[in-house]
Length: 88
Image (tube, rainbow, N blue to C red):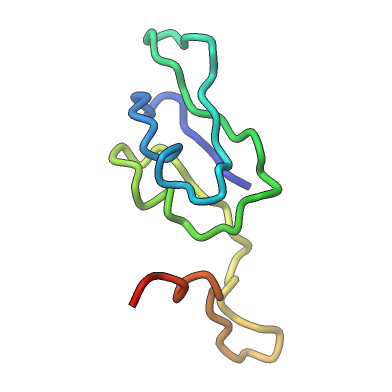
C-alpha cells in the first residue's frame, strides 16, 4: 500500500517520473494549495521497490511494507529481489 501525505506533497511529480512501473498518475483537480497531486492509479503494478519514497524530496510518500518484510518465516534473511536489478 502506498500512502501520499497531501499536506507534505508539493506536486513536484518526481514519484511519477521515477516509478519504472508507472504506478502514479496526476490528479486533474487542484488541492487546497492549488497543486495537482499525484495519486496511485495502478497499485497492482507496484513492486514495493521504494524508489518513489526515496526520491520524494518532501518525504510525502510511504510505501507501507509488512513489519519485518526482510525476514522469512524461519528467521532467515530475505532480500528484496528488485534491489539488485540496477545497472552494473
